[in-house]
Image: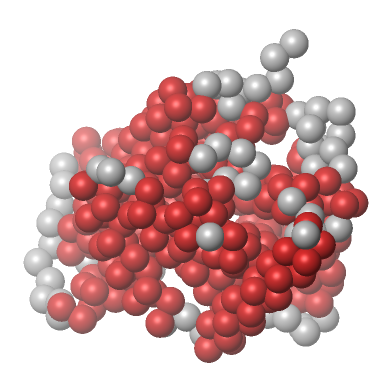
Length: 406
């Protein structure tokens, strides 16, 4: 029985997670920031997003395996930078996904039967649910993600089109500064982060070159269409502090708030499944290369790195308990993860530039490197310091492994 997945299910692993909580948060934030000019900002960022997807799709095809894009990084930049990229991603995922679950829980606990549950405890429940799902074979997880992604995309696209057909596209005149427009562009860059982890699933794709290309194309089109239509709908609603409740209200009316809570939970759960599953496979890959303990190379009968996923889940529960007791805030968690995610993406784009013969991809990767470096400069000093520590750890781990393998 073939346990590997094809382009349709692979696109299910891409669409929901890459939309993530961004589709809920970013369009209203962009509109509230610069009004109708946000539509131009979205056009720019979604074009860049297509090139971002192409870059990491190229890396995944050229160097498939559980290590994901780190395989290409090793070939173009050496083992030390591969290890740096891997440790940066793992560092980000030690805490980052808990922010996703806290986002979902903040909406879920507003639904009447669940209002008695604290947000952090609801997030723990979601982590436990995700852990159970992650132990299923990839076909099951990707099918769940595909169903959730399809449902969410259909609802958002349909409700947005109802608003657009009702009012057309309304362009409101508003004077803004170049600085405000630039800040909005930087904000919207978070809409295209996420493609870099897809490569970690190439070991479980039937036809790597064909299926990843098709899945990336399908996903990029649906993600871009969804973001753009939601942005237009938000613009057409045109009220202060607008949210997606107003966007889906043509379909769900008074139930919109509860439906939105379910949609957000589905998106956040999909994001968590993609990222934690990918990093679990990355940890297994590092274990097999003797960078990490042998215990992390253990799999289930269906090839799931259950030890790595269990350890990540336990760490996430610990982080959420610390959040419950106000030891860690969601802002600290996000700031911790952001620098590592951006640093990892920059290294991947450098590898794309080095490994690709395509002039368009080379130009795109250079431009995206510059943009992400600017984003990194706006990250917290704490996360930048973390990247420096990870760099020195990568050097030490590589020297230690070299001694062991001699």
